[in-house]
Amino acid sequence: MNMEHPQGRLVVVSNRLPVVLEQNAHHGWRAKPGSGGLVTALLPVLRDRGGMWIGWPGTSVEDPDGIKTALDSASKDAGYTLHSVPLNKEEVHKFYQGFSNEIIWPLFHDLQSHCSFDPSYWRTYIEVNRRYAETVARHSREHDFVWVHDYHLIHVASELRQLNVHTQLAFFLHIPFPSLDIFTKLPWRFQLLRALLEYDLVGFQTLRDRRNFIQCARTLLDDVTVQGKGQVVTMHAGGRTLRLGSFPISIDYNAFMKHAASPEIAALASDLRTRLPNRQLILGVDRLDYTKGIPERLEAFRNALLRYPDLLERVRLVQVVVPSREDIPQYSELKTRIERLVGEINGQFTRPSGWVPIHYVFRSLTRSELLAYYRAAEIALVTPLKDGMNLVAKEFCACSIEEESVLILSEFAGAAAQLQNGALLVNPYDRDGVADAIYTAFGLPPAARRTRMRRLRRTIREHDIFWWVDSFLRAAIAKDLSAFPLPPDYVPQDSFTETVS
Ligand code: ADQ
Image (tube, rainbow, N blue to C red; front, side, top):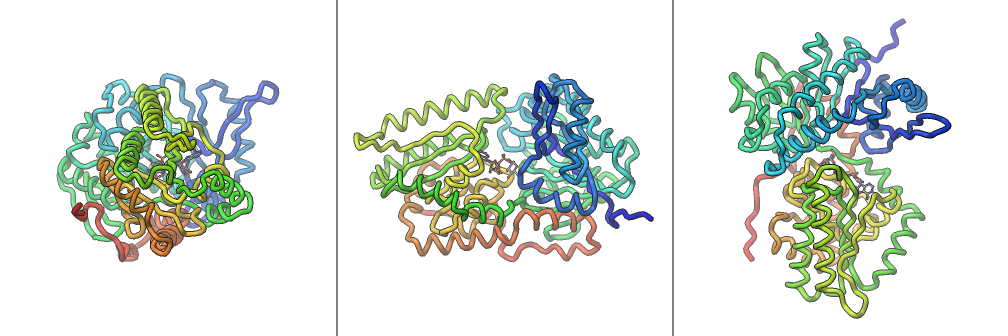
């Protein structure tokens, strides 16, 4: 008897497999399961429908048999199958660092001056996407649902169609989709756009990203029509019909909340607090990345200390930077720039009392350390220049157990579309505006903080990572798209309010 799930198995495809591989001199390879929000959310679906995860195992060492044995053993524990797509050093350089992170990443974050449009990157991108597609074709069956993740793998669907795979293919873009003027700078703009049309469902973080995509398609291609107005719409283009939706990604709210409320985190957070008597802790947590706006934030903090002397000795900025992509020259330059600024600002304001305005941490924190900072901080300063969503903002709110903290959030983070009713929104380029927001947050009375934080927490709780997975999967199969109306409190992200100072 055929016991297959009626909707077919789920095949997840992402650049990296959700495991960490370790090589041991005596026992060979070992794959430790990953623990991110995406894995947690997809796990129940993968176990229920049956399925597999396809991706690069994260090493260029050539030992296919050893790696396969480790992945097979990890698959048994995980409850779904892991299949690897091997990449050699040159492919990692040209596909991952090159096309993905020196072209699409900066361009889609509106930073075209950071792009290096090397044509050899493009050729390797296509070759590697084909390799992913071949792996999917080898392991998937007709009724499977293939869900491809992120900007590294835009071309997988068109490669699969060429391989005669006609199963349902869906794609989710974790980063922003740029506006027409920026997108048209891309030398491979037509190819990339047409590649996206080969999917049956394309998900964006926000309605703004989807609108940008539709505008690019309408301008660059002939015969594009769009039907519907809600969270999910239908597009006809290039002889194909596909669905486009906005699905703001989220976190496992309850897991964050429960862990933050645990005695272990409470003790760590109170330890951090006792070291800062009569001071408010302002927190910044980011991967080392020029999109996160760290130097701009430090300048704004300096400006706040200059313009609002009340803040001297009454606040401390803890800036945590997680090492990332340091092989790309712009990232190591950014690190130097951040460290110079921290040194300058501390040199400028440190007091004989021992007060130092910025506490700088450059390393990856354990989950407990991160949650202790989230719980201990009074103010989170989340000011990316542009961000697909920004999960740090959501994690901070989930961990704000006492509900007496304030979120300062960039207008250009995808999260602003959902969180604008509780956060203090800022333009990260506006040093005066960010300084004013810091001062406002500092002086905000507890009752006002609670009202805002409750709103934020409710929104995140109601739209957690499980809601995200469920709405994406439903959008792929729903007969009637009117089941996906726009959220009632939706305010377009490009409606800005003028503040007169
Ligand atoms: P990122 O650019 O990586 O993600 P973000 O959404 O903020 O940005 O996620 C960072 C993650 O790293 C968070 O889950 C956080 O807990 C973790 N982290 C942060 N600091 C850490 C530390 N010191 N130690 C260990 N872990 C730490 C991309 C897009 C985003 C989008 C996500 C998800 O750029 O816009 O929100 O994907 O789609």
